[in-house]
Image: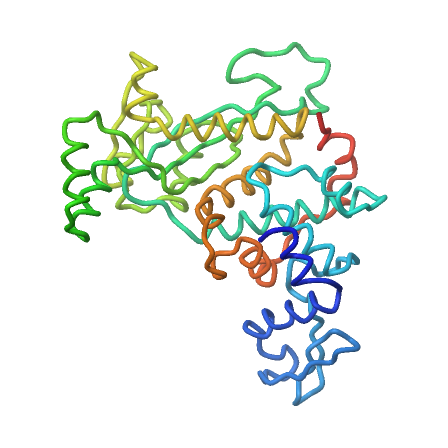
Length: 350
């Protein structure tokens, strides 16, 4: 959705309330007091009232906006900014665009939205051919580690470990599936042109997790929830991947005798995703607290997995509408009091 379209759809607070009311009506729970399901709308109170017992449910109850004092239009405009930009967005920039004096409410709003993006992604599991590898993202040294000798390599205090999982598919396989569906002269010509060409891969969906260590038990717990048992997983043969062959349909360990060849042929997309995400975060933030890294990964993955929606003219694929809908379903337990130094520790714009 373009900026001009946003202002046309939501010129004021009332238009935002009306739109969000329509979304909430589709998923209203049973009355927590009497169990009935029929409500009336009390405009002045911005709440749904049970027609049986008069119990009221505020418009933002059990949503990501619950307990927020910010206007609904501020939330909407922030969601528009997030979904209009491909890269991870800075809360400082959003604060500037909103013209708000206080930073904490903006930071909290951004982190809550990133939190529910992650909750939404938990619904889906990757399947088919999977690329898996670990990466290291630069993060701020924790207070407890300051003053200590700086370690090198995987144990460095300046890095946080991230597990990256990518569902990829060979281009030749995609072409074969296409030919099975569409038998045309153009499709046949494409097949002849591709015949004999070096196999390439196409990326589909991704997941990324900040992890404390690279032990096999840690990897196993994440894969159990993120990847289907029928998947075939390609890795670099690290010791932490030793249980994959027992838990999934297949495991193809590709030992990095020739790292360049492995990156190009066996694990191309996992390395591309790592590089783009890491560079995208570094381009916006000087350095971030390791506590916040997973939230930034949530935003990156949520956008990446819906990257083709931006080119669609079908309203059902509008990223703004999709984010508002999950905002109406999920809550977030992130609170400013848990991160009192967030303004100092995070979001320094270059």
